[in-house]
Image (cartoon, helix red, strand yellow):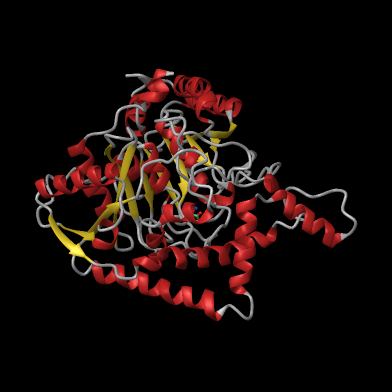
Length: 489
Ligand code: GLN
């Protein structure tokens, strides 16, 4: 098997039994990056020399079976700080920012032996669903170069799908891991809010942001989650709940007998692209064949998801982004007349249009006269949305739904911001509720020839159940082939 076609667990096996040298592995992925990057533009920075250097050191020391990711390369969404490696958040305002510390999730990967190959492109400050909001380049979908990879972790998902790396870390505030995972045909896991430390994750919506893995298999997601999850003193919202061994016993389930899977009608009885409906319904048939009990569920506040999410996220973003003032970080307009002029011009030139739109709207919904009408109301509805899920989970262990109403859309197709916001209709409610969700490939749409994803979600901290169930489904429906468009050209 080609090195770049190996998933994390296969690479690990080959590295530990010395079938492969770390140096060989890193070289193979760097070569693959060279071959594919021109076409897909998934990366913002390639950490070539340091990655090769680290590989040499690891090879000299010899395999360490206690390190679960010993010698395994990865890409990291450019929203996570990486020590001595540029971290831009795909924004001009952080263009020359080189952090002096690693995000906690990144540190845990490195402690486990992982090697950072590259920083992945994204929508500026994670605001977007297509990667078109990056200040630097637009990532293309490896399955069809005219389509978006999804966002905001689009570079991460495209890099894993294109075999530039066996896994990546992304962040999910309203769908940003699951949507690109579904558009690019890979696995994306958004853990329970608080499961993974947010230290060093550049803040977008602090009450919603969560770091998670993007991989090609469910088992790889289980392995990575175990490495990055757990309490961190540097993030007071990280949970002290013990971290489970998500891989242990993952193959135990032989069928889904005795497991109730909820089908929320608001997510299914709505306008869905035919490919999405067909592929997702096939998965439901598979669930039935595996003897799961399918339970109809209603989540009645679903229609308020987009309005609620966007009020809360813009409010939090406007407050989080106040720190970029031209004084402390990144870009500063140097010909300003005075302080106010410097502040205004640094922010106006440093932030892109979508980020500015959200800062303005967020400031508005938080302003004295409107706070009660918008922000407070949204916070109340958020609670109702969460209660819908908790009530639903009294009738079933997990629920499943499409990740997005359509497969990947064309670059440039969604010019109206509201159209773009509607891509998050099936994902954002899960962040509002703080629950875990995993997106896995359901199949390739017959008409679009693009991957379609399906997501499974459960009560807080039920990651292990989710991983067990989706691992079984993945075995049953099989993994996707390599993205053909990339191989053809
Ligand atoms: N598309 C959503 C937004 O723009 C979600 C982004 C995310 O999860 N980071 O806010």
